[in-house]
Image (cartoon, rainbow, N blue to C red; front, side):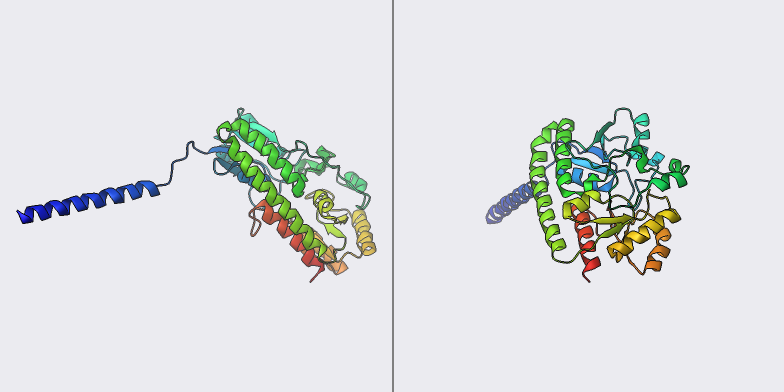
Length: 322
């Protein structure tokens, strides 16, 4: 009788433990999302990262331009079209920079194109501080068909390189994602508030870094840094390549040589997406340093938009203060 009672007590205790363990497992099991992730695309990494920050965790973002490729020379591949078959929209820069995305809409007619320049004050190419490019259009008349160049538009499409503009882009992303996925509209608005604060902090920190040292005039590889320079009070004295992928003429190089001498330029900044072989002899002849600025990111330590801006700010500071 005692043995039977003891056995019953043991069984009750074991059953109780089983219930407790079962409840704990249920409580610790990750909650299933109310909806599957929707997929959208962005033509270049900085735009993709902004969309990711606004859309997380409900939006999956595909970047079309591969890491290290230049948007000025890229050609869309069949594999890119295949990877975007389930995408609802593609966020693009526009103004000639990423028009290689056009074939997508022939194959995927339901794909929505969203250009993120809404409410952004666009600049035109050219500056009195930059050597004239007029002789280049004469000397390289037939070269444009192999490269995506600036002749398609007088407007400078590199507007994402301003953190103020990135905040405006983020608002456009919220508006569009709310249309695509209205269920999570409040989540997108909350993400926007946090992200815009991070961009404000980024701008303040960047200005502090640049103002902590002496920064001389810049000579950059191609005409992509005007928005960045305006935001951070920098001066671009010259540009090496008048068009991406187009070698400068001897006349143009002579003009650039005179500009670098007159401005006391010590550094020329190249870009990782474009070959710097053509610039090496020019750099060596003038005894200049060569350092890398990155307008696109997605490589090495530039795995977010914030990291991309930090990298470029620190590179410019260190170029003149080490």
